[in-house]
Image (cartoon, rainbow over all chains, first blue to last red; front, top):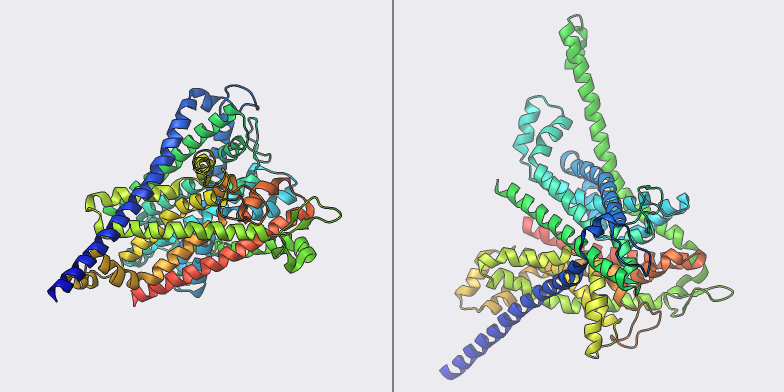
Length: 285
Length: 312
C-alpha cells in the first residue's frame, strides 16, 4: 500500500515538474521573439543609420542614398495633430464619465462602447474616415490621416482619464466644494491636478499607439515622395513609406525601410517605457 | 437666492463686482459641463457613425450580391459585364489565421502568466512582464516586415510552406496577441484570494495542482474573457498579416498555402479600387466589424461579470 502511495506521489511530482518546465519554456519562448525581432531590427537598421536619414528626403526608386526626413516630419505632424484633436475630446469625455455622470446609466453605456472602440480594428477606422473625409474632399490628405489617428486616440485617453479621476479621493473634492468653488473649478483645480501624472501617461500611451499605426493611413493620407507641410495634400509619413519600400525590390529602399523600422520601434518603445516610469513614480509618491 | 440678495445690494460697488464674478463663474461652469457632456456623447456617436458609414458604403455590394457574397469564392473585380466578387476566402482566411494564432498563443500566454505568478523570483517579475508587454508596443507593420524578411524565409527553408502562407500569418499573429493573453491572465490570477491557494498548499498540493484545481477554476471567466479580447485583436490585425499571408483569393488547401484575410484584402486593394469593387471591400470591412463587435462584446460581458463577482 505504501508502495502505491509512493508511486502516486512520484507521479504527482513528475506531473508537477513537467508542467513547471513547460511554464519556464513558455516564458523563454515569449522572450525569444522579442529578442529576435529587436536583434533583426538592430542588425538590419543600424548600417543605414546616418545623418542623411534625418536631413534628406526619400529617394526615387533605383537611386542611391537619400533619407527619410520628409517621412519623419510628416509622421510627427500627423501624430501631433491626431493627438491634438483626440486627446482633448478624450479628456473631456473621461471627465464627464468620472465627475458629472459617475452614477448615470449613460456612463456605463459609454464605457462599454469605448472599450469596443479601444480594440476596434484600425483598418475599419481608415474605411470610416475614407467615406467621411476623403470622398467629400475628393482627395487624400494629411488632415484625413490626422482625424483617423484622433479616432484611435480618443478611446485610449477616455479610458485612462476616467480611471485616473476615479482614483482621486472624494474628500479632496468635498473640501474644495465646501470652500465654495464651482464644480468646474473643483475639477480643473483639484481633480485634474491630483490625476495629472495619470492623465499624461494616458496621452503618452496614445501617442505611442498611433505613431506606429499604418493601416488607417493607407487610404487616408496615402504618402508623398516629396517634402510637403501641406495638410490638405497627401503627406509623407514613416509607416506608409516603410510599407511602400518593403513592397519594392530596390535594395536601397529596403535598407531605408529597415532603418525607418528601427527608428519607429525605438521611438514607440521609449514612449511606452517613459509612460510606465511616469505612472510608477506618481504611484509611489 | 444668494445671487438675488447680492443684486439687490448692487448699490455698493464691491458686491456688484462680486455678482459679476459669480455670474461669469456660473457661465463657465455650465460651459464646461456641456463641453464634457458633448465630448462623452460624441464617443457614443462615433461607434454609430462608423456603423452607418460602413453600411452606406457597402450598400451597392449588398444589393448586388446579397447573401451569395459570403458563399462565393471567386474574386474577379475586372470580370465583364459585372465584377464577380465573393468574400468567402478572406472570411475563411481571417478565421483560420486567428484561431491557429490563439491555439499557439493561449497555452504559451497562460504558461507565462503561471510562471510570473507562481514561479518567478520577485526580482525578475517586473523586468519579465515589461519585456512581454513590450511585444504589444511594437507597431504591427514591424511584425509584418519581420515576418516577410525573416520568419518567411526561415519557414520556407524548412519546407513549412512558402514565404507567404497562412502558417506564417498565424505565427506572427500569435506573437502579437501573446502579451494581451499574458497580461490579462496575470491580472486575473492575482485576484485569487491567497487563503485559497495557501489552503491548497497546506493539504499538500503541488504547484501545478494548485494552479489546475484552484487558480484556473477560480479565474475561468476572466481567462475566457481575455482570450476573446485577444481573438478580437487577431481578427482585425492588418499590417502584420498583409505582408505574409500572400493575398490569394482562393480557398486554402492547407496551412502552408497562401490565402488572404479581410483586413489584408482591404489594405492591399482599397486604394486602387472603385465602384462595386470598392463597395465590396467596404462590405468585407462591415463583416469584420460585426464579427469583432460580437467577439469583443462577449469578452467585455465576461470580464464585467468577473468584476461584479469581485466587488460582491
